[in-house]
Length: 128
Image (tube, rainbow, N blue to C red):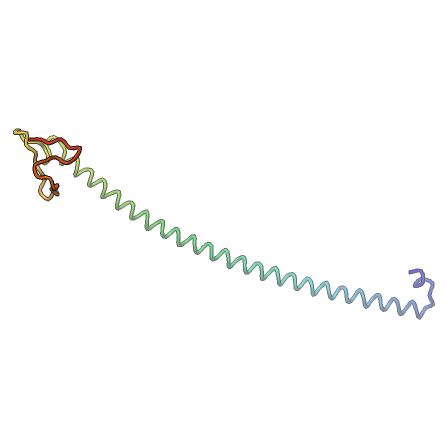
């Protein structure tokens, strides 16, 4: 460094030119690296956006599935409520499934009969 300061004019001029060239080259390389980094960030950003778009699509599909399930569950709950009302109407004191005065068991038409003729099913009390 001291040699550069104390050298004669032509040697100093050559060193200054080399130093300028080196600084210019460094600036060019820095610009190239900046451009490369920006491109990499942009590519990464594009990939990230595509990934997020895929996730949003999957969530939309799940939301539609949940809407379908919700509608189906609503229908099933309505059917259960109707069945409950029908069973309460049938088993009410004035309903169709009451015991007649004679105390004999009345079976509902269409009800399945057990394989035991005249006997109660296990755990069921036989009424005669």
